[in-house]
Picture 1 (cartoon, helix red, strand yellow):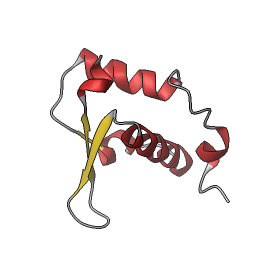
Picture 2 (cartoon, rainbow, N blue to C red):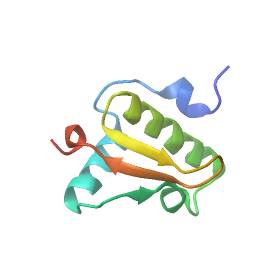
Picture 3 (cartoon, rainbow, N blue to C red):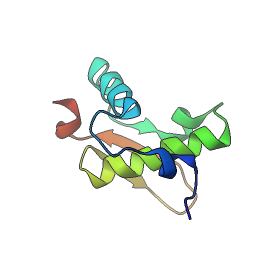
Picture 4 (tube, one colour):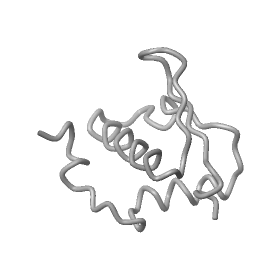
Length: 85
């Protein structure tokens, strides 16, 4: 059973729009880390769920590093060189 709509609609290809947008924003302005709370701020819960799922996919494919200091803490997102190519 999917956790959110993103699991049902995820195509899995490298041309996913969210991945392209995340890659474009990371390449346009180099950053040390992004905050998931900052990315999800003001978004409906369903959209935040989709972003979280996409981040897990990006992590599993080696595009980003995710770090969370403790359970329920904010997640830090860092691009890996593979994302910026």
